[in-house]
Amino acid sequence: MARSEMVRAVVLTKPRTLEAREFPRPVIGADDALLRIEACGICGSDYEQYEGAQPQHEDYTPYPVIPGHEPLGIIEEIGRNAAARWGVREGDRVAVRSGYGCGQCEACRRWEPRACPKRGGTYGYTDVGKPPHLWGGYAERMYLSPYSVMKKMSPSLPAGVAVMFNPLAAGLSWAASIPGTGPRDRVVILGAGQRGLCCVIAARAAGARQVVITGLGRDADKLALARELGADAAIDVEKNDVVTSVRDATGGGAEVVVDTTPYAPQSFNHAVAIAVRRGRIIVAGLKGLRPAQDVAVDDVIYKELTIRGVLSMPVDETFRAIDIIESGRYPFEKMHTRSLPLEQAEHAIHMLAGHVPGVNPIHLAICP
Ligand SMILES: [Zn+2]
Ligand SMILES: [Zn+2]
Image 1: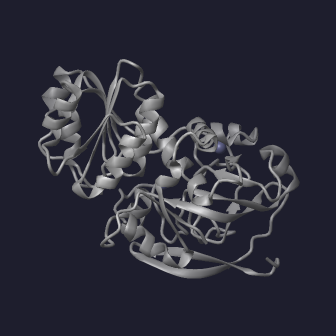
Image 2: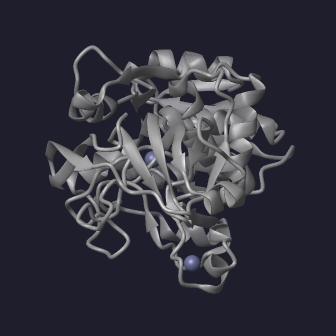
């Protein structure tokens, strides 16, 4: 690409409004870089951002933005200092963390944005008006702030598969490290989307004594894949009462319950009912601001449950996820349903949300 060329991107100007736009190619200095996007994973957060279904809070989307917080790409241009700090050079494939450092705090001044307590910003959630504008993965190129966090990734994997480091990092965090899952634990995963399936892998890898997953009737293929990935039982909650059937399958309940279901606030009640005494509940699937009704609060107390909400995951889990995908131990290609071009970003979001008849994808990526 000639230096004078424009970069194509998709801008979310306000909820439910995506526009194709072009931006000048950023000028790269000694400390930053330019990424040629190969694939940008999309997840439930993309849908919430698109819909505007998020709390009005400083951590959330300022519109307009270039969405895309799960970028994978090739370093196209990099400054000398950045190359030395990140240990990468032009032509390397890198997986980039969504969050970048603030550049002001002590950790950032030491060039250790992993330790930045302030979260300078998040790719896909940064105001497009802020130069050099290309702050999101729904674009041909993405600007890499000097305080980015990234890891090299093998170029031999298909981009749509490599970019699954995001849902896998979530699974490792939510179904294993945060609840401290071990051999004594039965793990129940509510929801069979990309993160639910990655939770199966993570719980199994953590040595869980039993792994059970739930899904809807239309998720039959996903539930079958969950079995292949190591789930002991996969339950269709439209055919069976979820609490009764999970209790049957587990012999009474579970030490760890991970709720990954989107837009299903009642699953919180199911988690409380399924958890055994001293159980740990991980709440991960956003409910589009819908409250849960009739929560059995006394059960939380009598069973001394730990309830933990999770929004993101630690950097170490991202790096572990990259290693696991590169190991080739799991059939991630079976989870990657489709890669779509930039022009179909809106279609991809609707498809992931289950709004496109006849398709029930697990994982999608935008490949500009
Ligand atoms: Zn995401
Ligand atoms: Zn900082």
